[in-house]
Amino acid sequence: MTIDSPLPAPEGQHWNADRYAENARFVADLGSAVLNWLAPQPGERILDLGCGDGHLTRRLADLGVTVVGVDAAPDMLVAARKLGLDVRLMNGHELDFEQEFDAVFSNAALHWMRRPEAVLASVKRALRPGGRFVGEFGGHANVAAIQVALLAVCQRRGLDAEQVLPWYFPTADEYRDRLQNTGFIVDRMETIPRPTALPTSMRGWMETFAGDAMGQLPSAERGAALDEIVALLGPVLRDASGQWVADYVRLRFAAHLS
Ligand code: BEZ
Image 1 (cartoon, protein in one colour):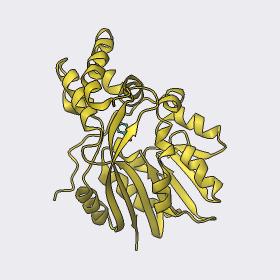
Image 2 (cartoon, helix red, strand yellow):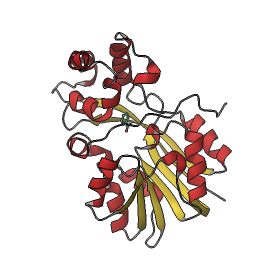
Image 3 (tube, rainbow, N blue to C red):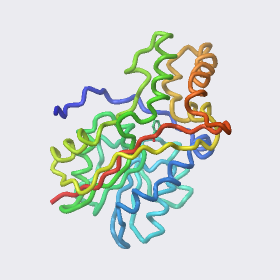
């Protein structure tokens, strides 16, 4: 299997912490399983890669961990600092750490980093010998229905898949190969279908997570495009009570260096 990424670096999603809190609180709420895989010990020094607004980072700190969070979204870091956390603006492809951490942890962030070989090399550099890398992110066919609807509606308006689908959702086999090729020993790896009830609506999800894709459309077109996406997805992703349930698939892994 090839491990060279054909994907370019993303331009970067523009995050709004208030909108995220309203539409995406479940992201941190559903992070307990991967935290269990991390098994953080008091006194350990842990890097939270893609810490966002810091809700899971805070949980790590409350367990007695010395935790540093990094994220590429300044607005989210403002929210994280309000939780009293040590967080820094940094790109996961180019972490500025040398053998500093007992573990690197990441929840729901690695799929935004489209050059996984650079991210893995960067994580390896940040870890002490024997250090762990434990994370969870979108796996192959994550939010597949949403991706198809977004692509169909944007393609009709002249955009292509590279422009509208900014995510990296690998299979377990692919990601295991990448970890091993970087020098990690893979302890556990699971692909987990996880239908997820949305706290607000598909419109709220799209505005929170696909804003940059939609932003490439002329502003006069965006409202109609969003209406079309929501109409396409309704019969597939709304249950009988009208609740939106998104078709999430997680890839969860635990690996370590020798
Ligand atoms: C995810 O956490 O799986 C996800 C988040 C935003 C867009 C797509 C997927």
